[in-house]
Image (cartoon, rainbow, N blue to C red; front, side, top):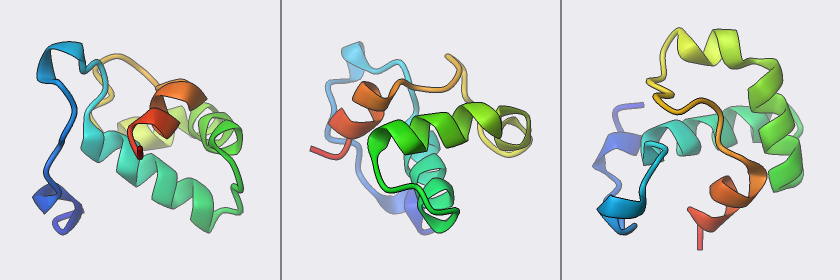
Amino acid sequence: MRMVRIIEDPRQSHKVEHCLLDILVMAVCAVIAGAESWVDIALYARSKEGWLRSFLALPNGIPSHDTSGASFI
């Protein structure tokens, strides 16, 4: 996770509800587990929320598939 922290967040800070670090880590974990779409990533994150909360902030819970996908545009 140290390397992910150096990625600059280009999003408008006043519109941000989810930490970019959280979104990136969730996406990487989900893809390693076989996710092939943003919907798959969101479903994976919801099913593993307890585990993800053990090392991610998730101040506003699990982001939707639309939110996660938009973070990568």
